Amino acid sequence: MGCGVPLLVPGLRRKRRDGDQRAVSRANHPSQAGDMVVVELTNKLHTEGVVIHWHGIRQFGTPWADGTASISQCAITLERPLFTGGHILLPWALWNAKISRIVRISDSGRGRWEERAIPLRRRFDLLLSDWWHQSVHHQEVGLSSKPFRWIGEPQTLLINGRGQYNCSLAAHYSNSSSSQCRLRGSEQCAPHILHVLPNKIYRLRIASTTALASLNLAIGNHKMVVVEADGNYVQPFAVDDLDIYSGESYSVLITTNQDPSNNYWLSVGVRGREPKTPQGLTILNYHPNSASKLPASSPPVTPLWSDYNHSKSFTNKIFASMGSPKPPRNYDRRITLLNTQNKLNGYTKWAINNISLTLPPTPYLGSIKHGLRNAFNQKNPPESFSNDYDVMKPPVNPNTTTGDGVYMLGMNTTVDIILQNANALSANVSEIHPWHLHGHDFWVLGYGEGKFSTKDEKKLNLKNPPLKNTAVIFPYGWTALRFVADNPGAWAFHCHIEPHLHMGMGVVFAEGIQHLNRIPLEALACGLTGKMLMTANNHN
Ligand SMILES: O=C1O[C@H]([C@@H](O)CO)C(O)=C1O
Image (cartoon, rainbow, N blue to C red):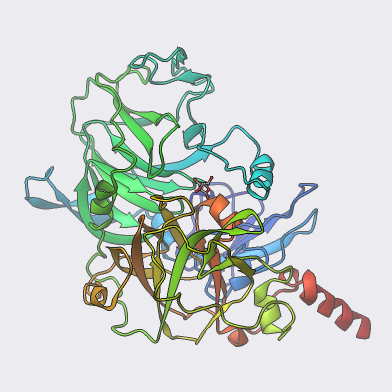
């Protein structure tokens, strides 16, 4: 589940550090950094297990609440509740920040900067998603079939769950036969409108929970100043549009300094894949204009889907703000992960160093803690790939194998990950993959073209690399990450494109599990750990 999950839900208890635990009513008591939040979840779905992943929350000391079935815990099944809790760290603190913060703002590129106090309460949360009108089960069956059936592109892009389908916000500008959405609020395609006052500064917190689409977001006539990425402050920079990949989040500041007699479009469009999906639209509605007054000009045009230089230029502007923690200067271990599309007995897969991930029935956290060596392959997966592999060409031998091994990391060691992209199965195709790490933030040390080599080493940014939890690899490129394995647990690291994860595009890291005192029984009650518990009970 994505970053914008409203945490203040019925059944939620908040535990203060001082031990005062009480029911929290909706919305009035936003959580604060350091709070222990306990969410009681009951699954009433008849046919599916459920887990919640608190994307961006690192779960220090509570790795069993990370919400990754088969990795951190057992899935919650019909009517079996699980109490999940976690310390709410920086991202959540930012999400609820009410304080003013001094931010340096550029004056639309003219090079002067000024300092202003930003009242952060003026803010909008924009949750971006992509919508297929077919069911997810149908998609899953296609992906796991021979011949393979790809899910295709989404039919609709959604902003806060609202998008255009039967009627169109932009019909006024296009030759489309669909009717114009009238913005009365009752139509299916009526958007969530952003009501603003002239001459104010607003913070937009943007998170992408798309299953596939890489997106570009722009607001007609308005610059955006990026101030935060994945819950960490960055050096502010101004842009006309921003790229956001699945699993990422940003905060931007906008100043409502345009002609107040107009409204303005906010548009979202597809990047990196040939777009077959109309733009997602909403309106910046300047007070006191009517929200249904259409903007004077047409919606901002999304940059050409294949203009990767545009995307790279945005990504390369992201640096940590002053005072952010710096990475250790040296690494203890470097793992290079080659991303390839492969075949396995006629099925289409994605593989990392030629292993396509399959998850075992017993979650790693419990099986490692209790030394159940039969639960998964005890051999570490490969640290790298063959030197003579040509990343610019389709694989010479496209066949892959599956595996469920884990990269066992030394507690508190510094780990470098080089994500290496390659050509997919078809010639001249290499795709974007946003990689998301659980349990940690990582420093993004750099991006580059082709195969990573020792000469690229000197170009890595150890001075002010941004801290993120999701980072993209560009087609035919590499991305270098560094993190400290300081959080006891078993952690997924995977492509955030859902069908790609389904097809095996991920790995698992584990560190320091012996340091954990006790794993709650609810997280162990399945697979071999479940059996172990039953045997222990029978002996008692
Ligand atoms: O995993 C994928 O499969 C398809 C295509 O490569 C084969 O149909 C696609 O676009 C993906 O991202």
